[in-house]
Length: 431
Ligand code: S3P
Image 1 (cartoon, rainbow, N blue to C red):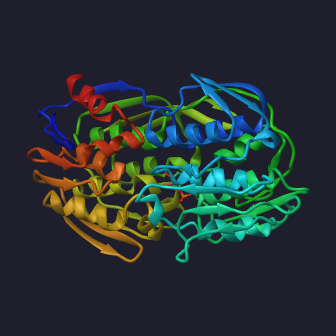
Image 2: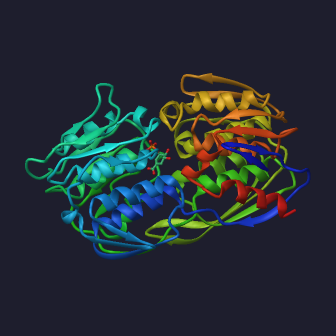
Image 3: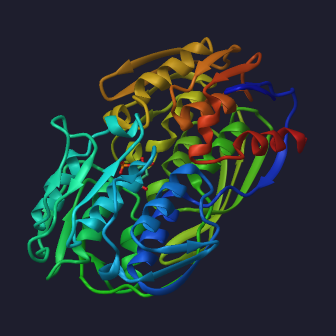
């Protein structure tokens, strides 16, 4: 692998590999562990936090709110003592930071303004407005519903409410839950199925919430305790390694200690439906969230169709589905994925662009894409368009391409996995 400025050239030697690997701490769990321990009064310990820039954005923002975070320790005087920020809170590229912190701040008796980088400044925040305002907060946005997000000073206390959210977004559900924890009575939230329910499981462990149905969660306001928490590995990061093995028949990778939350592992179901050999086992549970190992062995792949709940549970892995699909036989169709349009890039356009740049057949639709699988991809030049998952999916495609993959804007991988390219290289050096 060679690198020059922000260009990476990934070329994988022929042959099969067999590797066992760990991956960085889960991004979704890291944000939540930081925020939920900052709600508690006292000292918490979080081990294995995600190493990417997004998690660093949450650390930075919490420090601005008076929380002390050093090494693996989070010291807080409790949510009621979070201090008024002296200026705008910079969330960088991290939508999770912006949405979850906005939810937490909705119950604070002062004003706050959350800002993002160029990509985050284009992402929809109007989805926060209805749920948070139902509780009594006031949320200001740009005229087109994008950041900055301005939380107005609160007149009284938030009131418990039952709210239905029409978008399948774990971030919006979590924002609502974090605000509802500060209300004067019980609240509930319902939204379409398939979401990652990490926040819900954490609250259930402390009897601050209860599942009323598959999609409805009730929140009981009150304090949260401090914690000693181990962040499980990120399945959305592990998915890059699983894909490398899946598109090299005979290769195998085992990832240990990854989150197996049902809202995160739709991709394993997709891999199986395409014919890959998948084994997984839950070995423990942390705050009610399952953790375990996953092994994927590559075999010839066939096309598949993905829609509905499965799309939601595979959302962040859909660029990788495109790579698998290009290496498979037949036409793969992904539907119900309109949310991809408002990720770190328009991920329908950028995923289709990536496959085409590598000589594959891909067509965008309004709510997904179609990939014409030929069983191979050529070499090519892919622009990450500033999206970490596109940069990393392109690098992984090199395990199946006929020649090198040049990635422009490769460094953006650091958003979720700073050592990604080096860690990927250890796969084939394990041959
Ligand atoms: C996340 C939820 C998902 C996901 C994102 C992380 C979270 O976003 O795509 O990478 O940690 O709650 P949406 O809530 O917008 O679907």
